[in-house]
Image 1 (cartoon, rainbow, N blue to C red):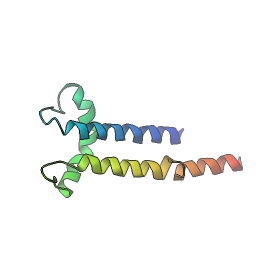
Image 2: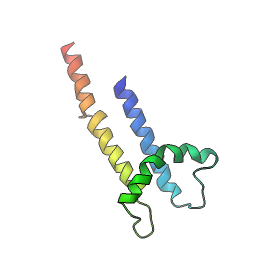
Image 3: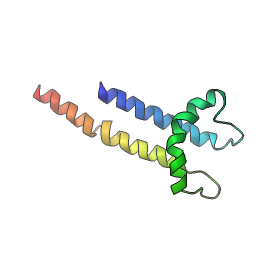
Image 4: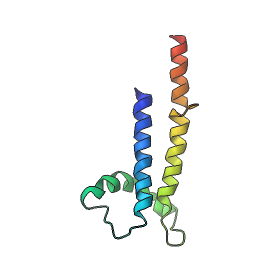
Amino acid sequence: MLHLALGLLLAGWTLLFLFRIVLTWYPQIDLKQGAMRLIGAPTEPLLAPTRRLIQPIGGVDVTPVVWVGLISLLRELLVGQQGLITQLMLRSQQIG
């Protein structure tokens, strides 16, 4: 159950950051208004401190790309085919 929930959570977060990447092409869209809050609210708490560490490159905010990479790595390490949680589940099935 934890395996599935964590996998879905990380996949959902990746999807939100991918939406953020696409929305950077449309700077006129306000992520604090309407349905766009569903994308802005869960991602901004991670992006804001990251922007202080990684400045825009050529005027382009690359922090959503950084987070897609980090979350994808974390997802693979935890719930991927060789992930820690996956391996623990397999071992518990073999023992039990």
